[in-house]
Length: 414
Image 1 (tube, rainbow, N blue to C red):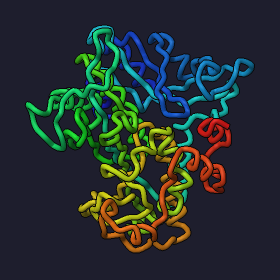
Image 2: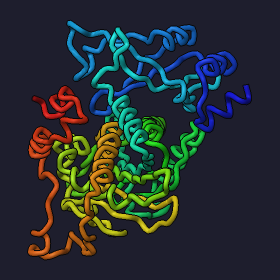
Image 3: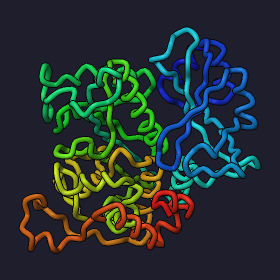
């Protein structure tokens, strides 16, 4: 039992047999089988422990027709297959009669992976990268607002506080919420790196240590669930939408990425060049709502396709770090993105840059928010709105190569 508890707490790999043993010894009564739709919205179905052997062997059927983009009533059966490596207890549930969660792959009745299973798309991207001789690592920084509820328990647009960037209590009322979130994540084996108040009133950010792509994506999904849960338990609402307040800073999802190879060659420049080259093509998957484009060009959200060291007005910045902490930070995505799709596309863009030795343009060591129009005219821009982002994706051979047409059609309402 102690071995299993240690493994669950530290997110180590364990077998189906160990998971079944954990269910018995830890008084688990409910198992949430979690997955997401094509937009990254988390879903789940709960089963009892006695159903878990069947879930591992055959999968658990769901009605896919009730989930947007997953099919219609004529072919509605899909099966969830739990991944034992993702077992996590939910600390906010009772100690006796515990609840745990596992992420799942999604398959047709014949066992074929469902083409809209975005977690499996990321798995394939990781495998393709490893076959090519590269490992990628990701770290996530997600921003969110905290708002008051009205007398009926519905969210308002009244911020939880009026603090600003890195303020402290008592102005920063989100301090205890962030603390509770971080401690809850730690109990789940997810290690936050730092947390602070952001620029907007009631806006917060929590950052994570880097990890492999699939773990980082799973943790990002878990993070949003934990924040929303802890906020709800404290009588407030957590909002991850890209632009909750019209005249305030939007919510960013800054993605830190690094690459390693067996020969320890530095491929960072090629990786960045690849992402810069493909960024317009994949923007609709990084910024999938009309409101996403209201962020661009203000409050440290980029508009131009550029890079630099440390400069937060750029699309990609290389933070001041050395050794294993050296990375590139993509600053355009927002938290409405499907993390699995975002990471998969970034991997494929990076691979394209590495394998084709794309030349990284010179850094843009200027403040793009204050630059003159003549200087700005030399830069390509990100798509200005959702419609132009859809057009860029629809006309991209890169997107057609890695994103199923079904998913593209769903995103662009075709």
